[in-house]
Image (cartoon, one colour):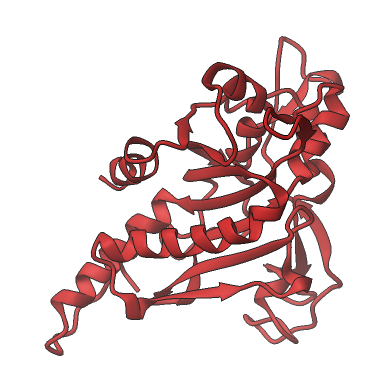
Length: 287
């Protein structure tokens, strides 16, 4: 139901969006160009006493389990490795996709040439992604296999900030239109030191889960990072030609990206809370 509602709102009821179902396993150079092989990592720390491992951004000071001293942080790549072909060697190494976005970027010209879209327009898809999470948990909030609902909306650079704000409001309202209580949602804009390597700006729609406020969906202004990087790596210019202005340009990209699993968890919790507004107590999904 959640996927159908998302697809209907963002594809069927809009005239500026195309749907796509990209491959889960792509050429490994895709992940080099996107920066995932070098930069898609969590910083981890280990307890010197109990030997348990934690994400550095989830702990402060000493070990939360035993109070022991923690090691210095070290990066841990989140991509799940596999091999293509009969041999398991370096040349055959590739990865399960950690996000659906790159499948949209490498198919940008395919969609543009077949649909004859004019800026601004979007490409959307729902699909599985895989991450080698070290600390999965909180029921289905963080898992190694999950489903994303993702839009890459292409616009002229000078219009990107307007569309960035538009999509923040559009995505926030989608949850409340489906019945989620507004008081359980908030928009948190990222500080500059939080931004991913590709992002010009980013905001999270957060939900008040039983374990605290956490990300339900992220909306990022990715600028022209992705199309430019894939163009440099492939030698194929992933540009848009503006007939009216007679110019080629790399569009800026606004990316609303949410999780099917997290949305389901939030809607279920919201429904349980609504049932218990009279003060009755009930355990919610084991929390």
